[in-house]
Image (cartoon, rainbow, N blue to C red):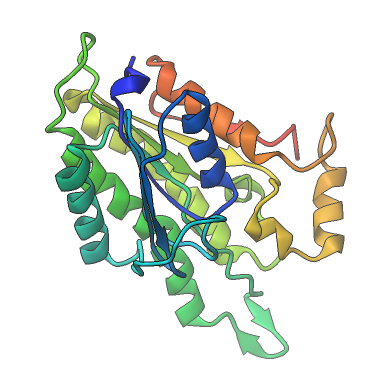
Length: 264
């Protein structure tokens, strides 16, 4: 198991889910040294003992985070530059948490118009290619880590979605991109096993997030009706708690974990 007091975590995505991960770090008594923020597409923050670095697509900055850098996880060059900067500044990456994602709702045909190709490519670019960009470059950085006593060098956690299996109307691109995240989890875990790197994906249902905040009330109410107890949106700290468990449980690998309150 990775020692949390000797671990550096890089994550992509927008508040509030990644913000809860930073709160988890604070709860472990880690000192907040400095914060470098984000604009629409990129964020970077610096924590000590061991350190947390935030980079990736996002809609809004975390409260109190100063905006300084703008990039895009769908752009491989910017992801490489971001990971390289993390390694240079902080000495390595041990955990990568990929939360970056956009919805891009559109029907396949609506009022005689086709689903825009540009929108399809953008959703797949951020949600799937962007995730793979971070996986590849963070994994390469992890191969340089000194393995722990069990041989582990790192953990990569990806965010899929319940929509990967049960997408709603207008979610063709989103569902396809999140299904792709599930589909690549096992082969990538097999690829990286020889390097002591685990790969686990999480498939959340309806969570309190910037994405769900923009959802029509009728749609969110319909999804809530499909849940078992407790019939409510998931809370960011519940997502963060699962991320922590994955990091700490070395026997979790090559799998996708649903966290959706039985929504079917």
